[in-house]
Amino acid sequence: MAGNLGILGRKVGMTRIFSEDGSIVPVTVVAAGPCPVIQKKTLESDGYSALQVGFEPLPERKVTKPMRGHFAKAGKGNYRTLREFRLADVSGYEVGQELTAIDMFKPGDLVDVVGTSKGKGFQGVMKRHHFSGMRDSHGAEKVHRSPGSTGNRTWPGRIMKNKKEPGQMGNRRVTCRNLQIVDVLAGDNVILIRGQVPGASGSLVLVKKQG
Image (cartoon, rainbow, N blue to C red; front, side, top):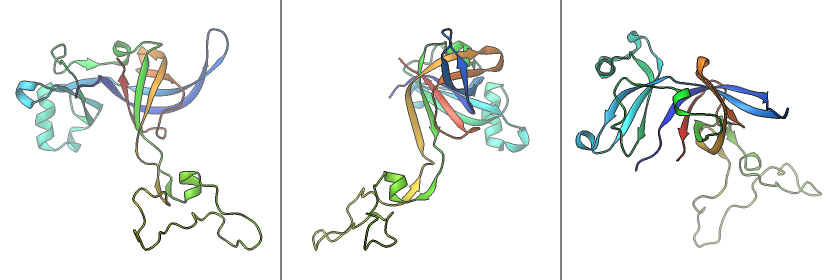
């Protein structure tokens, strides 16, 4: 299924800027690109249309021999991260072409940002699922944060699937949709996105165009 082209970046952190009317706008700073096209996949050769792009140069000593040959075809060096973007038509792009933030986005554009949320470790039901907890009154001892009864009668005699219970929280792929680009700083390859985006500072994010 065809999607939209995007660009890879690193979340730098959050700050605030002042708009023309003097109001404060909270923004997330993303150092995005440039991302060269490493491989162009077509229906004839691969069965689908897509662009494979690279992000963050990598020393050759850290690259395996097969990947060195793969990167050599583009002639743009070696890269730490590769991602594919499925497109309906890739005829307008060439291998080695660099995708930059200033060419892809402008202030006011709406984008989808994909990242890995912060890992919270093993958490209980109150933090993970917003349970209210047990009552804190006479006769209730050391059970205030427990989930309560989770069992059934003889039938079905088991815990049902998707039951909300304690477990791993965070550290999963999250997509924030319809975020607005406030500004694009061409000299620094930086995008300012209104609001927060998933992930910790320094984590990899993917900014995708809409429409």
